Structure formats: structure tokens, C-alpha cells
Length: 112
Image 1 (tube, rainbow, N blue to C red):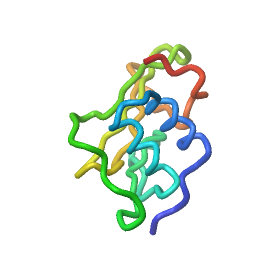
Image 2 (cartoon, rainbow, N blue to C red):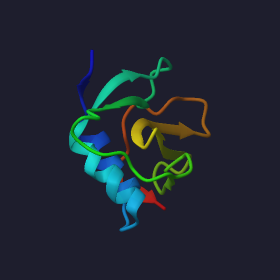
Image 3 (spheres, one colour):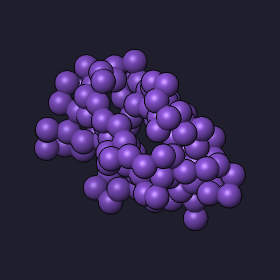
Image 4 (tube, one colour):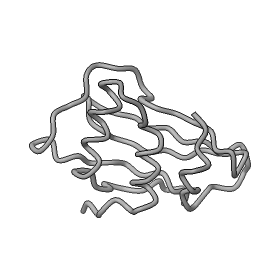
């Protein structure tokens, strides 16, 4: 069952989807209608996203990931936003260390 998107995940999506381009704008508009469908099995903060497709239109055609960035801190981490059919589908955090990142770093550390 879907659960609400956490404040940290919401802020991370907003930080990754900055800009005035049509894709970022459309994906940002989906955030209030987005929930967590499932979580990554490794224990990291990555979440599968579910958007109420009846409430918001899809983003224009674009590449995947729709957005990606590194974190200034922790230095070995990054985040990506993926979509499916123009809708938010995955917010992924990754790391070059062997330990999973279990909490979203502060969005102010996102470097695009």
C-alpha cells in the first residue's frame, strides 16, 4: 500500500527538479500527488514513486534520468529522478561507498 512521501524526499525532488524547463515544471507539479509505492530492499533511502495520474498531466517527452546530481556532503553520494510515461517513478540515492545511505541528505547539499 502506498504511503505519503516524506518531507526529506519531497525536498530532494524539488531540489533535483529546479529550473523553468517544461519537463522540470511538469514533474514538480506532480510532487503533491506523489506517494511512495515501495522502498529499496537494500535499506537505502531509494523509493519507488506512484503518482495519481488522474490529477496531473504527464511531463513532455524526455530522457531518463529526468534529473541527476551529486551531493556536496556526503561527497560519495548522488541522487537521480526517473520517470515512466511522463510520471515520476523512482527517486534513487546512490553512493560510491559500500554502505547504503539510509536517509536523504539535506537538499541544500545537492549540486547540479
